[in-house]
Every structure is written in structure tokens, then in C-alpha cells.
Length: 245
Length: 256
Image 1 (spheres, rainbow over the protein chains, first blue to last red):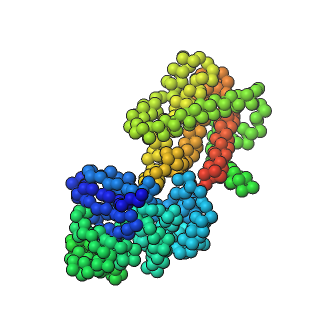
Image 2 (tube, each protein chain N blue to C red):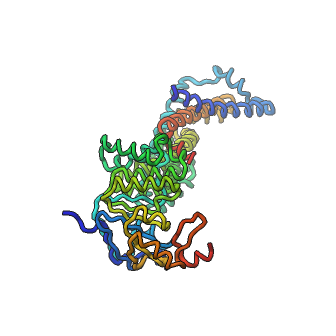
Image 3 (cartoon, one colour):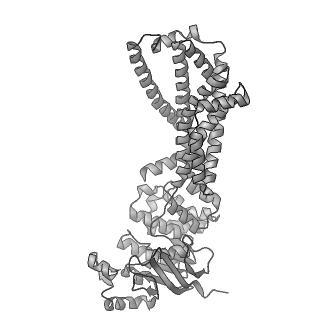
């Protein structure tokens, strides 16, 4: 029997002191669905991922993950400085007591090619650029082909060309995985997500669910919320930030 | 071969330190008469005139007391630090250890002498009690610097406590274990001499005390050199062991 939802969030609330970041948030992610969570900076996206991952507690509300082994890709690479690229990538297998089969080894080699890390497998994190560290973290999270993947701004510091290759490879190798993908860069969304949970306030509350294709239309309507920055990328910003920038 | 080189390199650094001390001593000896500061050469050439019978026994018993007392403090202090950190008893432990630390060694030594009589118990207990607080407090402080972000990552993987200990706690502990060993052993050597002053009739501390009473400064300087050599050789061995077995933790931390 297959589960209808991979993630179900019900009336979740979270505040830091008097600053509320998640307010009565409810949404769900269907099995096999790839959804982007698009919200202004500081809106509590990372906090939501941390709550779903179990490293942060919500003040109230509840959530259900229909997978015992969800994978989270955090905003920072979180690589172990005393392990090489290869050791970092295989660490989840070691922790979970899983064997590295020939099939896994083959996938690993392919991922290294896609991420241009083949020659860096024996390097330590301090020997890598920011983008290479981020790619290593991506390979580490994706190699096990998780059924449920939560990603928090996973393509930061990765060049546009590499990003396209990596996303294409994710779509090819994980066609049935459910992905919740947090970003504030609009251009990344149609590349990976089918649907978008759109938050227009600097608070995660009452999302509007739109298709990734419709996002561009939404952006042109809500001019006060989205601006195009100097790199010609559309980012979600709150109105006060826009003035500062 | 590589390990031998590492050990020789550590020993070389310590030898440079020793050479500097001997040089300063040699210069000081020029300005003071030999009955106050004898020259290094005089101390060396006149060894046969003052070296006591059974010197090896005295040296051995001092090393034994140092290793047992400090070994116990090192193990118990580290375990106490880990326990206090994991059980969140950091403040009570700090208060207790600070109280122990301000206790004057001479007073504590006399108490142990009255309790256990003349013998090895006094120097061993004195070494253990006076070095333990530093071990425990340093361990707690080292663990407080563990990498929280990487720990969260392991929690997200549902890692077992043993794996969190291996990948998070051990890397945080390694530098502390080394500095505790280095700092603690130097302290232990000083304290064991005090303990042997107070409560024994053998060991280098006892010999040093006798030589001091009779103003036999050549003998006094000889024992000081022996204690210094012991500490330096120990530091070289310890430094080599850590750089061989735990090199990756230092290497990565230095470059990060």
C-alpha cells in the first residue's frame, strides 16, 4: 500500500521570543511530488526544514513524515573536516550500516562526473571551493536515492552550468522521489519543482499553491515582493528589504 | 619510518628547549659562585661524587608514583568531565574542582601523611588530587566547543550515540586530551616531588630535599635536570603518539 502523502504539516507554529516565524502553517507533499517552498528571506524556511528534520522543536502543531529515512540537505554543506570527499559521501551508508554495493559505486562515479568532483575524491573539505563543498554535500544526500528529500537552498555557490547538470541528473535518477525544496531564487524553481508553495509575507503562513509554470505570472503581478537583482536572478524579498537594497 | 621521523622531530624540538635552559643556566653560573649555581659541566663531571646508592630505585619509584597518580587523575578527570558535560552538571563540577584546586598542596600532603603514614600513598594521592581538577575542567571546556552543526547533521541521519561520540565528541576531545597530558604531566612531576618531600623516605623528591637541606647544589641541579629530562622525553613521546594516531583531527582543524 502506498502512502498518499509523504509530508503532512498541520497548524504548525514557531516563534523565537516575540518574533513569530511560522504561523498556523498547514500543507502536504504528495508521494512523488516535487514542491518548492518560495518565500522571502527571513521568513522561516530554514526553521521549517529544521523542524521537519527533528533538530528544532515546534511550539505547537504537528507534522508527519511518511518515510523512516528522509534525507535533508542543509543550507551549509556540513562536511566533516577530518574526512575526505569520498569518506564524507559514504558516511550516511556507514552510519546506517548499509553496504556500498557495485550499483552504489557505479552511481557514485556518475555523480562525481556530473558534479566535476572525480579528481577531488581524496581531498579534504578545506581543499575545496565553496561550490565543490556544496556539491559534495549534494552527492552525499542524493547517492542513497531517498524517497523523501528536503533541501534548504541546496544550490548556493554552485555555478549556473553545474546547477543545470545537477538538477537534470536529479530528475533523471530520482524520478519518483518526493522533494521539498526551499529557495528564494525563482529561476531554480521550474528546473526542479512541479508545484510551488508561495509565501508573500515574511512569515510562513497560509501558502498559496501554484504550479511552477504559473510562478512567473505571480511574480510579475506581485512586483513589490519580488525584484531582479544584479545577477539578473529573481529573488523573493520583503518590501522593506527592497528599499534597503 | 615516517613514525620514527615524527618522534625524532618531536624530540628535536624538546632538545632545543633543553639546550636553551642549559645555556641560561651556564650563563647564570658565571655570575654566581658554585655553591649557589654550579655550572652544567661541574654538575656533569662530579656525578660520581654525589650520586647516591640505588639511584635507579629512587628514580623508578618516583616515576611509578607520577604515572599512577597522574594516570588516575587523567582517566577520572576526563570521565568526570564527559559525565558532567553530558549530564549538564558543568556548574557543580566547576565549583567542586575549583575548591579542590585552591587547596594548598602542603596542607593536603600533611593530611594524607597523617591518614596513610609514610609511603607511596601521600605522593600518589597528592598528584591525583592536584592534577584532577585541571583535567576535568579542560575536558568540559573542550566538549563545549564540539561542532553543533555537524551534530545536527548526524541527528538528522538518526545516528546512534556511539557514532555521535566518534564523529563529534572525539574530534572535540583529542586536542584536550593532548593538552591535558602535556600540562598535567608537568604538574604531576612538580607535585610528586612535593609529596615525596612530605611523606616518603625514597624517590627523587626525598633525595632533592636532603640535598637542599645540606646545600649540596650540584646534587640539587642534577635532580632538576633528571626531572626536566623525564618531562621532555614524555612530551616528545606524547606528541609523536598524537601526531601519528590523531593527525587528521589536527590537520583538518588547522587548515579549516
